[in-house]
Length: 522
Image (tube, rainbow, N blue to C red; front, side, top):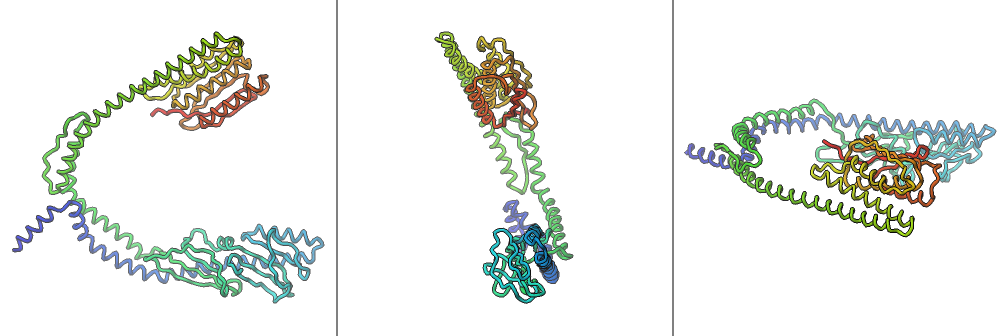
């Protein structure tokens, strides 16, 4: 009977998935460690009670001392200032100097200073001085405002005369009471009778956090500073709680490795070798005959075989689609280039038959820009097979040759000097660069410049190149038609924006430069 039961259990276990087998084995192995971890957690929580209470009282005492120190500093300064105001010949200047010193103090606040027995001397800008008796018992009187947004201090001298009023807002007191390097997870209130000033509300309670509350008298016992927090500290039991999961992990890793080595790793290594031997283009994959209690391994081998068949089929389809797409893109660029050349030829014919030189110059100006676009498409078409982008060196060189050929008779002697590095850019960048070079060259032609220099060098930032253009026509003192110069500046500024770059101008040297994005080669 016992043998039959054992055989039935073994059969049921064999039919389980490998993940469920691992879960059952690891759960049984880690159960004792889990019980120890729970016991350690309970014991640690009990041991921390006294530590947390002591920490709360220590931090609360420091915060209260900071408040009392700030109040004492304000009272001392106000008392000294009141005496100086009463006795100084220029009491107004003394009052304002003292007021500025107070406002620049470590705790931001607003102040009103009084001369003993002589009324208000001066006050912070925008500070509405609250109504108060000019005489009372000597000392300091503290009060939380009804709305809980500020704390006011009335300072009365030894004679009972009012010497000054201080008002600290809630933000200033919140910053004063925060101790750098400590947690912000606590609540802090300043309580006076039925009034409460909330200094902090960041305490987050939880099922594993125990909160503690404490209070400390401030301002000579006129109000109370209350604090609520729950802080976890690292002790001996806490260290044990950290070590126990590590031990649990080690035990789980050893047990898991022993099981995985037999059920998964060895069969998977056999499958991995078969998959590694597969090469793209193979029609099938030579999977070994795997005898493993994990039926998922056999299913994985079958899935690999199905994937190989699917990938082979899709690769053939993708290759055909890429070839069609490449031919289509090449044809589009070729047709665009041809169309632009036809347009340029028509513009050239119209320019030759123009009635006057102005019309011919307008046709030539349009032709130069159409030529610039044609050059971009021709160079992009040339690099399309390797997908490197447009060669800026070839583009600018060919463009310079076209500009020399279409230059008006008045600019036939103008030279174009090139110093170009081998850089590649996207078609959008190439179009803007071609137009920018064309605009500057044409501006130089129409303004009687003797030469144009174009340089392309490595930029300061990665992935950029520096385009530099120099000409006599770009200098500040070069005579040129004002409307032509205004139109030229608007166009080159717009082109620099299209290039998403800032155009640097040196009108003394006649130099324009800007950084352009390039395609970096891996």
